[in-house]
Image (cartoon, rainbow, N blue to C red; front, side):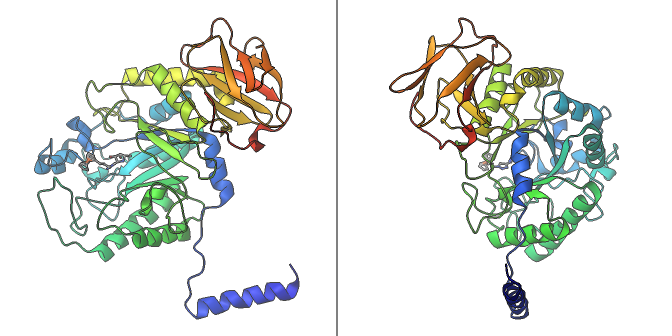
Length: 435
Ligand code: H79
């Protein structure tokens, strides 16, 4: 750009400020988000005093657990076997690259000793700062540390409550005071623990407006322009547009659809409940691995949730399943991390990821002795093999490409066949047809 043009632009921005027009709010840099989307797999941790009752965090307040009982559980909260290093190691061994802790869920309890709310961990018999310990353990072990903070707070009299189960109905609240408090808490969390990402929840809440979300987003960016923020700080949850607040989409308890345009992350529980529940039904290793593969094949990240027990440990059976995911990723991680989803949409027979000149063809079970892939104009396969194994034969046909599957597929959960192409697979437009 020539000098006079730069001066004009500069003058224009000054005029905008002087006449009170809002300048474009700072957004999280694209490079930061692109890097986040290479991570593919993170651990969600839902924890708090409610685990003493084994019911759902937030939502069981004044439902399965009487409100007075729920709000006093913190007095008994003493997870003496909580070991941040062990939890982070479990995440790392599972092949996870980031960890999100519920610093504050809808029930309003803070897992860190906040200067802005007394309803916090320092008032429990446990006393220790779990958020600080997890942040330190993540830093030590090379896991990106992230914080969950919801926009609602059923414990705070400034929040206009409309929880269907709450006994204190028709609370008028004071959203201005509430947002000030929220900013204080967020600034405290960001400056003390330096999260890589803030995971908000509560976009559906009636008292919370999109403008509230925009205000908080701008505030967060003024404290740390690089911290990633999910889309639940604003109202829009299904797609991103000019009005959306936040950087990426967050389908809950379902795998997102193939989407090359908007970054997304599915949050899914290893069992059924977010917080720990005794004998909760757990997903099989196959389901867990296939969930990760299908998510990556849709071009998304998987935030996989565990709820530690009242003593602070993750259940042994869950640790074991996570270890098996880690063992699978040790062998096949090349087909997940840093890949893109597509170019074919996942279906019942296969799911694909791609990187450089390779397509990774994921096959969960052998239904036929071959797979037929739809034709990609101008693309030919130059080599094919089982990842870490033997060569695979293939031939083009009128409809596309026939890939002969080996007699036995080596992995019980998910198998990877590498297809090398004559060109960069990442540049191929998505094809939705085919089986
Ligand atoms: O933290 C986890 C959930 O607690 C939180 N998001 C994930 C990450 C979440 N909170 N609320 N929701 C998701 C939407 C929940 C709606 C429901 Fe219900 C709660 C369905 C059943 C109980 C709303 C209230 C519909 C019926 C009662």
